[in-house]
Length: 548
Image 1: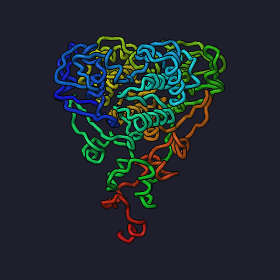
Image 2: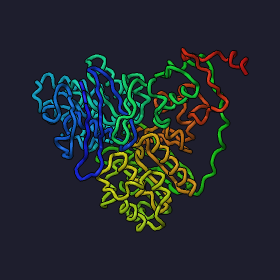
Image 3: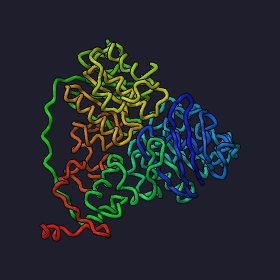
Image 4: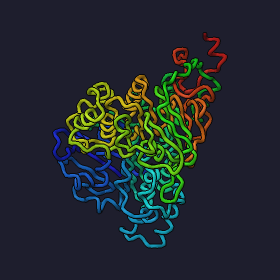
């Protein structure tokens, strides 16, 4: 299906190659996963598969790339669209129709699919991706995760021979991500559709992948079966279950929770005593009986919330549950129909977002919307001038932006642009930090660095509220988890209280070992020797005790 030989590519106006000496092939019907650091070349590689590179992007392209029997040097997106379905990293840049139903049907209309087949496929995709209730909704009114599911439905409706997806679950809640992966599994198994997917979060893809390709600095580093290359991949790129399997010496690497539990043979690891609760500072955010209605719909209803300085709070819930609306309301972009909001000492009923901006930071889902200067350095300096303070060297270093300071933000990858926007809004020591899906497009190492930045802000007595679907991140760094459902606060407590025992919003370690275990940090790894044998099955607990 895909055969690339000595492919290299340089974007217009750049002095470095985005792809270098790429030799790569994917067989028909395979499920191939592409991983690697942000900015490493994943999206560029994928754009070669539908002819966007080189036909629409310009630049310098070399080598041979054959996709579905078509040489991409000769055939562009018009021809390759009949072979390749493509889902972009940013679903907003892909939507063309007014309503969800029309968006799913649009590509089929362009290719002359008969009305009967088209209608049937629209219904199938609405049900398969769980967006049937949205069929008549205007696309601009959808949440980021809802738009992402619609974009996937539109690409899948064509029944392409090759389906290429660039981080398709980055904005989805766990239920939505499971739905997408299940749909991909059915396409691959039942229709023999070749799947190529670039992802940072590998946990859901472990049971499905036939091959894993690691690309970094424009070059393919490692590729093959997971067991062949897992030992040479960065630990931060691996799901917690895989990391634990490595530390326990379990081979082959279990791909599912069920397989891992069978390997454990009833053994449970020692648990570390949890740290005592942190002491928090004064209240920085107060919301009392807040109700928000937009276009006749109630998006928030009866929200009571108090957030303090010196704490990190994860805001979680399904797509469309009200997370983005709550953040926008706290910052003053949406005005409540009822209730009172106070942020950083300001009554937001009488204040504007511009007034609050001197004391608080807000990063929206579309991080590019806050970037408007010519360089990353200019973006950060603008905030420093507006908010005061010194150049945030520690933020620049922690987010890995030193080499990007003189780049135009619009020329960066999605993950790089997100980090630039983070640095821009976090400069000047804001008292309140509101972040909407801040890890989209970030690799595991960058996510770890973001956690370090947020912990430092907490140490400086800032109040951090981040909306996220990343359960592992929330479990690792949050002091509290606030869970929304249909615009109401469903749960508010510690990560152990809110994230334990859920079918979707729980961590891999919690699903493995149950209450008391949430992350690898909860396990006393130092007290665990490697007990694996060649079959991957641990010895019994009595044998472990006898061995001392």
